[in-house]
Amino acid sequence: MTSDVTTLESHAAWVLLAAFAISLAYELWRSTAKAGTSRHDSMRVFITQGIVIYVVGAVVVGLLLAGVAGAAWIGLVTAVGGILVSVFYYNPVVMPERQPELIDWVEDLVFTGLLFVAAALLAYEVLGKSLV
Image 1 (tube, rainbow, N blue to C red):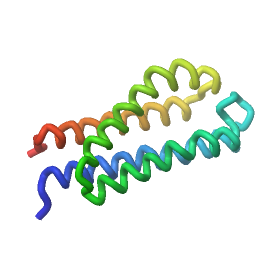
Image 2: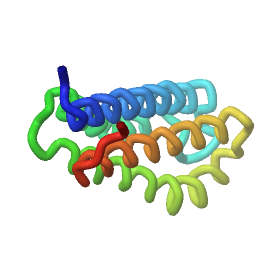
Image 3: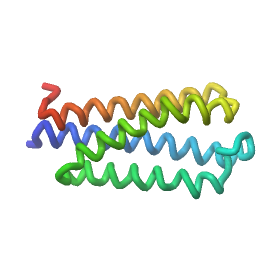
Image 4: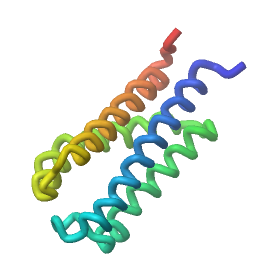
């Protein structure tokens, strides 16, 4: 039987994996189907800037699933950092430049919402709390 801490870490990892997978698919779509709509929508920008985000996400998910000591803190900092970037940079700067449609807003809300879920799970873990 796994402990609550391991369970919270693994749940947070799967939530982060879903968030980053959705974001990856969305950004690939924006860089191809919507290329040129804004300065953020090109394969060049995706490769030079976006890939770093997904590599970091994959490493954090891997650390959480492996149960590495301190992974919960790393995941929490990553999730909270992503939330702050979303709220204070992506939404006020990038979204208006992209001429957003419904799909853009849905992806943004789902991605940011999943980051909040992961952050809550990881906060419980680092505080030594459980959900039961």
